[in-house]
Image (cartoon, rainbow, N blue to C red; front, side, top):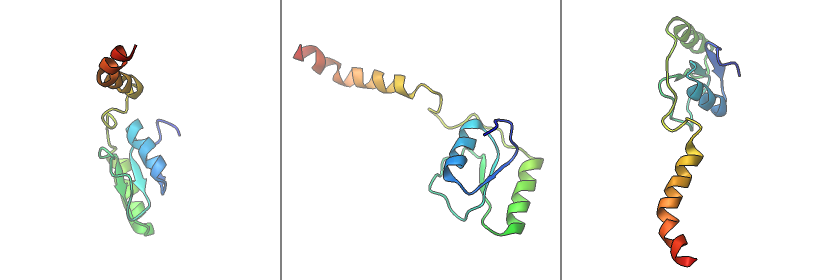
Length: 96
């Protein structure tokens, strides 16, 4: 996916997540989604042609700016290791 796409039209929840992380405006051509975290970048347009076109034109006129979801910063592994070390550290030290 190009990071300069404006807007992205999709029916894919995975693409919806990707556009959210990249801060790209997205028009989701569905009536519902199992991925509610969109940081304002995504709009559910439904499946009617007129509604999809209307939402796409709005996204073109007023693009969304987003920093992406909290913790989507390529440092999740480091945070997990710090938490595990803090929680398991005393146990690991006493078992050696």
